[in-house]
Amino acid sequence: IQNISLTSARRATATTYTRLTTELSLDSEGDSGRRSAEAQIQAIQADAPDVILVVGGTDRGTERPVIEMAKVVSMALQVLRNEDKPNLLFAGNIEARPQIAEILGQTTNLRAIDNVRPTLDTENLAGVQVELENLYLQRKMSQLPGFDKLRNWSRFPPTPASQSFEKTVAYIGRHNNLNVIGVNIGSGATMVSTQSQDQHSLTIRSDAGV
Image (cartoon, rainbow, N blue to C red; front, side, top):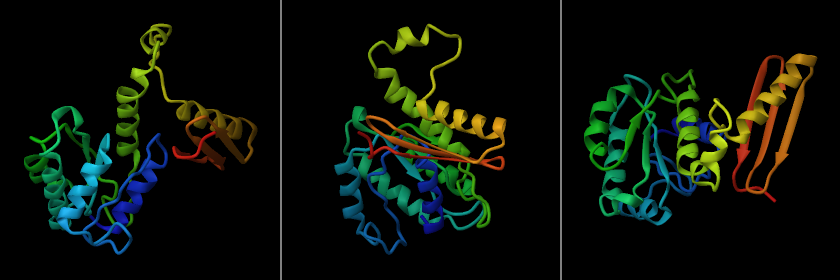
């Protein structure tokens, strides 16, 4: 897993209701880098994540680092009970998908999506963002009391508040030709959305609420 891919993964998770617990890398020099395989396995088991996002390598580039990391993840998950195993998202080198599926596909629910870094100069976050939002709906929002009743009130499916907030800020900016920044401080998370000259961004801090 290369640092450039990790940077893109961070950006993708920052736009969803995601709390990043641990980063594991084979070539990182940060606090979470250069751990032994045993330490990496223990970190995954201790965190008990809902989702593991595996990234690494440009399309048709090197495959070895992401394959090695997949093996570490597989070993960590083998000792977990089925109900405790997280969902796995693979958003790395498309050439590595068959091997990733062979290593991780039998371990837990695995979904391959578009590479977050198909080339060194291209960043593609949409696939990861959509999958994380879907998992949030399935694993968190759908468990809220009264969710099924609320869903039946409209022919449109419920969406996370972040999507509505982002669209509201974008509409205000475009409709009035303004540069807009919106801040939503909620009980469990804080959202910051900006709209400027047909460009918009959204950042969610799931660890900063009132």
